[in-house]
Image 1 (cartoon, rainbow, N blue to C red):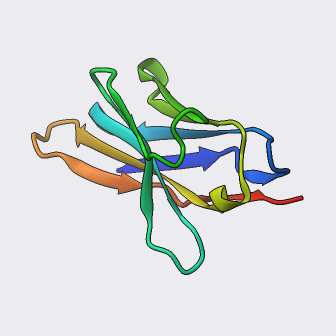
Image 2: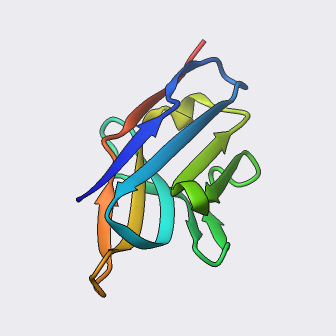
Length: 121
């Protein structure tokens, strides 16, 4: 079984910073893609940032220049550094991973439980 555990959410004032972390554990052979999505109340879940095993990254236009995604392959961990936060960044942030489990060739998708980020004065 595979588990994703997120941490780092909270309440921050506009202009502030937060760093989210997501650790993948379990019977993992290789992690192909790690990313973050978010869902604000009344809105659809949207991609925030994603990074591949090859090191490429992609960001939503709304967070470019403010958010940075990174990963530590040795720790099966992905981070999201969020700077210059705005009230419109308020949402539940979900970690998302595409990986292969040990002994399997298929690629499976997993989601974290979500962590709340609230940007408010």
